[in-house]
Length: 528
Ligand code: AHR
Image (cartoon, rainbow, N blue to C red):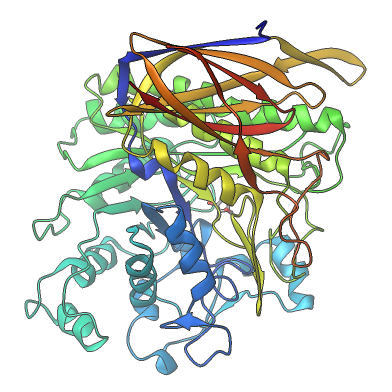
């Protein structure tokens, strides 16, 4: 059988273990994420567990969510965790960070959530993690609170029963056992909403906030705020100050460097110096926009490699790994399921391909990335779920995470892809992008292969060889749509979903698969 694409997988050439934590999610107090998304309240007619939306918990449990980041984002840079503990009815109402955002302020006329009632705080978030078997990843405020407040949040979460006054407060809230929080982000976007620092200034703040925090025997993982996109000056300045400055930092708990990368289609000569105007639209886009989004999404691979190269100069043994804790497409407003959900954009099959492509990149760089959280879980940006009041649905992204869950904890395998490029035009000039790419991993005698076909027009006949081992059997799943704008709605919840795919095992080591245009595919190959 002739093939358009050939994929060679080297089953005994492992790159590194794929950290399950790269399949994490992000939940911020913004728009409809927490209130309306996660939290409906204990007295709600919407089915809930401890006030948390049950449909969300059930669906999350289908995809094995390893880690959840909270409470921000920029929200975290103005948040005092103490406001969110103690009796629910007695907690203070505060002005949210998002009150200062021009988009949010404009939406406020429609009733957007920009005042924070603190109904959902640390205990409620921990409950959410327990219900979904996810590890908590807390983002601490380094912009507007002193370091002692951070120490005390760690104390509240991790000090043993009966040891401290804060352990007592935690017990009074129903949680005598410590939460044992390992992952702590110390600052968020500290070059921007997190304080507008200079990199060396931020490095010295990071050192001050983290060098002497209480441990309680927890294997703390401290994550520093990385650059704006691929800003190498930020990374160079920070690492130089931390690792070679007058007071070198010797804290083995500093293990993560946060990277944020949002993609949008930038063609059509949009206003590039206006953040919101520059973005394309979630539902209204053309063929050029499709490929431009793919191209912008794939940039995360270069960003990761560039950042890694700088980090290698100062940390050659790589104590510090990449934590891509915000990623996904970001569009202009207008497609929200509820108009008050700031950044609550719709999610099409195009976004599912972008998400899958990003996860494949993480798999291929399993040696570099230790944690990643998609922005955001529900009702915001690249969501897996959209909901409003009693309405709830999964987006095409949910199926991507469902298909890719099998990679968690596998050995990332070296895989070579050879496929024709796809050609299109940008601003009247020829442009091109790769047609088929993906990743492979192995857990004992099962190899998981995931593939993204970005080609809008043509199916690809792919021939996959597994070098070194025999194939016993193979199963496949595919997510595809005839219309590049396809997306689910409350009325039509199954417009985009994954389906079974026929895989032909032709000889002991060869598979043939017909891959539809604009699709995400998963193969589960059992070795003989
Ligand atoms: O995810 C939305 C916002 O994007 C986050 O609050 C911030 O960290 C980033 O700029």
